[in-house]
Image (tube, rainbow, N blue to C red; front, side, top):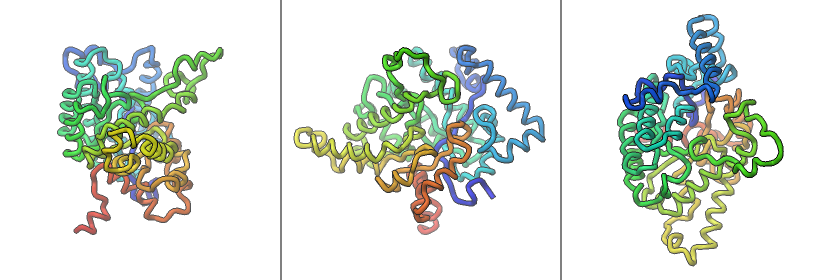
Length: 392
């Protein structure tokens, strides 16, 4: 019996925990030295390397490895998580977890892209990271690799997306902020959206690049800054957490208002690890804005659907395990939400499946199946097994 007790579950959020040399084998000569190591001493690199070394040593110890494999979801997380960076271990972890599919996002490797000083370096880092992620995911067909491409340059962003998809990527992620100096709805990006739609590849917004944090002036409160979520200094703090959904709302508003979802009706995407309790009210406010402004705004007049309907058709969201997904479903629609474990990140908690099961009490199996399985299939342009059997 698996962690999910035999239920068919697709996991819309998991991660690699990149090692120090994660990018190096895939970087072109010009930037090989720059990306020879992922972590600097300033970022706590020595501590991270010690955890990686401990995980590697565990693999050589049959007793320690067997113990770690007994219950990966409740065990150590991060770099010490079972299968955090070792693809053979991830396959074994998936066997225990029982997930049918798992979207796999990078973690700290993204910093190599976001901190690049110019476009050549930025896109070289993106290509290296995407190749490293694909090499990890190629270990098992259950792992759906998420590529990352910067949208600073429309043509180069499209070129890297095409290269990554041809290599096997099943989704394309980018910053939730503006696309360089443009809206994602600018006509320059129409070839990018056309490619994703035609290739049946969803876009992904994920906590990280483009995420808004509390403005620095609000942090000037006369007190020492508190520790972050895990007691350190590099992760989220409470005021930052309260801003998580700002960037996705801005991005999706632009996609609706600028007509992207109208021009590309089969485009699909996901907003991952940004919470989802805000979604029902966001949909209501989109429609409220339409009613308030459509008499004078030509772009609103030209829409063939209500703004919220574009979102319901195109986008899916992952709630945090401690959010009440049942309340969200009652307040909006069951097709909007997806299960996610965030494995092996500790934010996913030691029992995400159990927490979501509790919040879904009282719903029939059809609604639960949407949350755990078919909403993911829809987002990924994949027919569910049940639909495929019916069609046959």
